[in-house]
Length: 168
Image (tube, rainbow, N blue to C red; front, top):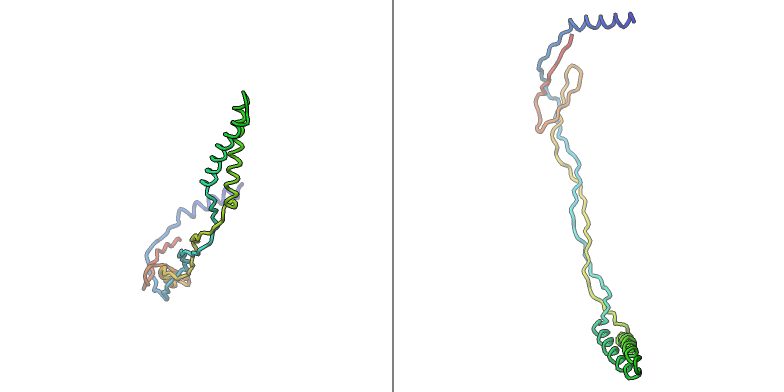
């Protein structure tokens, strides 16, 4: 405990008598060299090609017409076959079956639809990358009392200004 108290008192006494001086000085620049930074630049471009794409040409209007004709024919046949209260059920059933048969026959007549090919243009965006050196500024180097001083600026300097503080 005594050591801590003595250290604190000693430090307080020294700091009461401590003083400092500050002044501005300058040193000559020994060397100024330009500083560059590598920058990557990306330029977009498109790469395009033509591609053959299959297109089904089965006309939905052909199968629709076939379904209508089949439905009408099936309804007429069902109406002829049925009798009494079953006549309505036979007509409806004949219409449904005729519609399905007519649609299938129309699609089969087209061979299930012929496949043709159409040319489509397709493109992909790619990038060219180039690297270039970009000027950043100047690195100015000087010496002050055995220490190397470096200051960056946008132009070469003749002298580097220093703010010096001396404590005693």
